[in-house]
Image 1 (cartoon, rainbow, N blue to C red):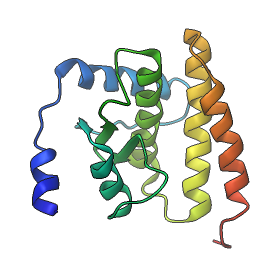
Image 2 (image 1 turned 180 degrees about the vertical axis):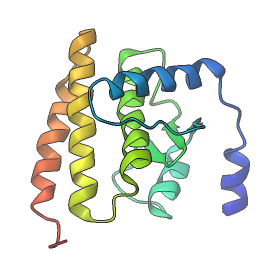
Image 3 (image 1 turned 90 degrees about the vertical axis):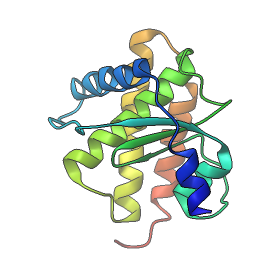
Length: 155
């Protein structure tokens, strides 16, 4: 499976997508105190099974539509079209996670991870409002994450 994953990840990234990620990180930096951007970011479109393996190391539910690692953003092909407001909004959210990692390090506890999700969704709402994009999903996810926060073990 690792070889298959490595082959899939060798896909090339369109230049405009990397430029878009940089622009989105700069936009996020104007909303939150994150001075450092990662030196290199790669963007990949992969299938949902690959996303599950990147996130969980195995199939898991619910299936993610995007996953961010320290220098990579993985988007579910056929679900995240960067030429749409929805796709751009998802990419913005994932760009916030890149900034979080490069300014705060990894999220080591349940509550820290969920608080970063809440922050990313909150900034996504602001981003969407500025562009008159739909905010229903990120607002719903903020509520869902706040509820999940109560389920974290004591960190």
